Length: 420
Image (cartoon, rainbow, N blue to C red; front, side, top):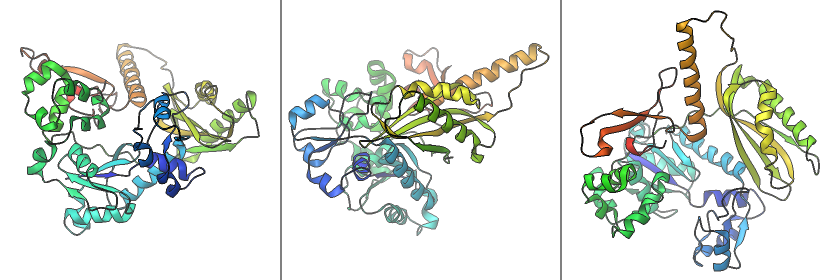
């Protein structure tokens, strides 16, 4: 069984509690998480008071303010959200869980292997999770990730968990609206198309022939059909984190050359950390905490992993121009490590070494793409049934092997619907 843990409005509560507000005052007023600087001008999570005016997450700021003139926008705080959510995942790992989480406020883990250390049954695992995370969480369990999410969504904070048996998963999912599919990013636009065709519930979707769904909607339709039938892909737990970060307080009104010098100093400090163990850096994150409150974060991925301080600073320097407000502190964090820094050119080149070098470069390119766009980004097409009348059955997408022969741990969704 898969357990889903939901913490409603996690990003909004973290931004308010980490800034200048309190959770009690937040829940009583129409408040929404403001848009990220430089991103889409849409509100994030909203309070129940804002929902009463018809304001929803993802709504344009202008429309939200038109519906609720008293709406307060809280500046986003990605650093606080990231730190607090990492703490939540750490607490789950302490009870033995291997959590998978794509966004703050939602996490899944397999419960079958934990029965022996928590009373021998699923209820003991759920009790341990609630004890570790507090009473504010919503808990649901089901035979698949999507079913567990739907079960947790139908519970209430401080309420008991909802468990969906494997034999009743289709009956449980059938009355749910197809809008529940939006929880998967690759299916964000599909519910609207289904509703236009008169398909309102997951039960109606599950009743459609697979061949017709594949012909009309392609890979997203097949993934949605699998979810409606209670099927889903295995979980891919997060890798153990290796936090390597440095932060520097800035003088008042620091800008221009001062910021560049601060960045050079931060890069030098990161490279000097013993946790790096001589490895190169593949991806870095530049963060800032603003004088007026809120934080900002931007990622930079190198085309080739490096430990050269000049090259790292050069990759991060353009991000400084994106700072939307004066910053009181600047930070650099390692997002992904590369191989050990011992690159050396070959003295003698032959046909075999040239082929090996091409494979090495191809593997490095694959890892670069996956660092930027996710584990399921680099895929290849494999012929399965080339004579099939259904185009989607002729080939499937599979993870492209990297240089060392390893492949992606998960191409999110049904193979034809994987991201790529």
